[in-house]
Length: 209
Image (cartoon, rainbow, N blue to C red; front, side, top):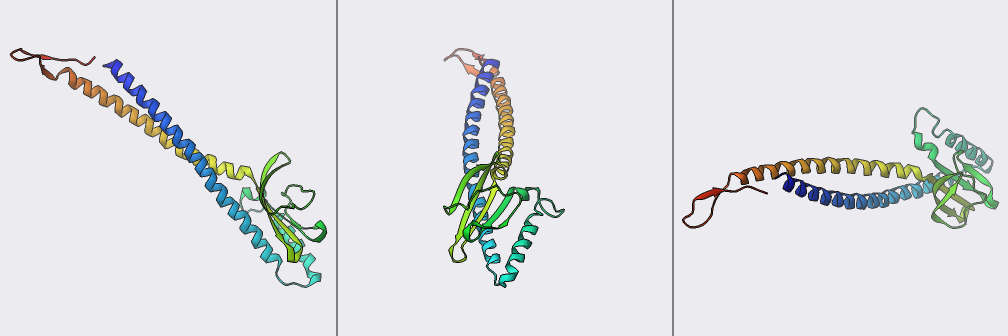
């Protein structure tokens, strides 16, 4: 009985591990794709919000003060008591005509010049991996850049994967225990199950091997 139980449980556990591994791999890739989509949408939305605020009609002599107020507010990201620690991992930069840097966050990576290609792209700066979004505004001669460090995304993906794998692991262990008990119960019943050895022959008892 013990040999039969062990063989069955080990095979079932192997199937469970393979199945859960495939599910976890699929969940990881699917979660990463969906999270990338959501964060990319936020980058684009932030860039367009910044475009809308900067496009508000102001006097030319007040525009420099507006840019300075932007920089002062963005410089408090991650340092204010009301906020989030991830704020310093998000950054904005706006270049004006001639590549003049108008608005920026101190946490922004150092870029020698405004990116020439609009849209999303990945790059490395200062040993950190970044995801950036470039929004040209031709009528204002602006180039708006919004970016975030990739570890913000990876942290969320890791949390989702861990929270998914833990129930899988517990469920597999519980199922293995139930299978072990069920096989033991079945073999115990098999020991005492009456069987007939043939017509006219006396009834005998069988054991599970």
